[in-house]
Length: 65
Image (cartoon, rainbow, N blue to C red):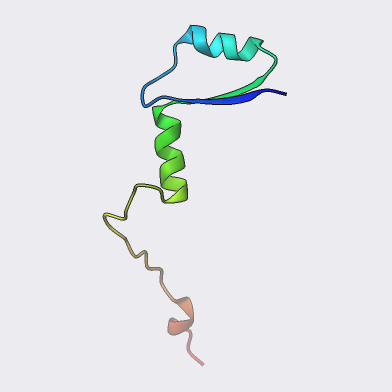
């Protein structure tokens, strides 16, 4: 079985996408958008620029006994 991965920082042409859909060996195409998402998901080559804290109301605080 033959497998392959092609990565580009751009986009694949419609012809390339069509061709990969027609061939028997498993070939994965990773374009720029997919590459960026994979980098973010796995923390590769990225760092946090900002972290936001989200607060919610603690309703138990307002309950009278």
